[in-house]
Length: 149
Length: 149
Image (tube, rainbow over all chains, first blue to last red; front, side, top):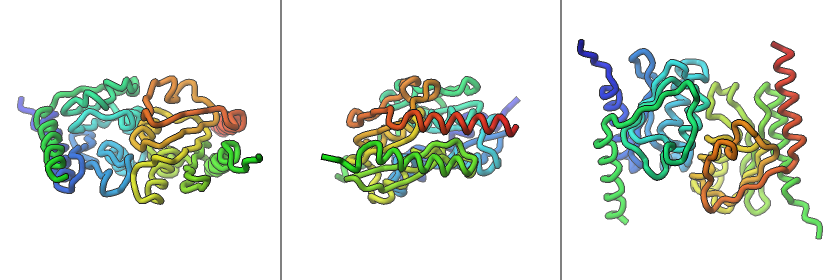
């Protein structure tokens, strides 16, 4: 049976958010939250626009999803994010108790795996979905930034 | 020489924020951000009111301080928080690159020390300022919660 709503489908939606960030001069990372195959939150990094280090895509997606659901726990939700979450975002995901995190590319230096951040025991994390696309967009962003400066 | 603006002075201001949280039925944790002996941000935990696990006192204080300063890095700032920051908040503090974190009481279970969260190399962290008062307020809150339920 063909499953139209698979991880690749949803990661493409997160990638679209990353592309919006890119066009705005933001580090291009996007995130969405899904419950029962429905997207309930879409967000992208806004740290430059908001002048706020806490405005990562995941943080805004968590806040927006809780707002949609009317409760602060994201028990049956999956978060798709184009780059592996950092300590802050993984820490927020811990508190949200969501079921599943799917990331695109690893962040070998500042990602939660390298940093040893703990997720909630209820949360499963997987990676590698559209990894090449996600890391390519990020690389392209930093190459352009360097050339502009 | 008497220094009126010492760590105890500023922690009392953070405790006042924790007390506001307490009165609102929020887990009583308060935080302030100080630069050159001036308080530039005051915040308390609002996770219940905002239905948002990311609404910790420190997160809001970081956002408010950056807003006040007009830049997202809190290089010369000190954050006073009544309870040791969690993974999420320590992760946010990492990104903010602030100079100093002073906390009141340890959080032996969910605090950033037990969880192994990394602060920025530029950031120094100290604790134990008004520790007894901060943990007493927290204990009292949970005793009352239990008695109400």
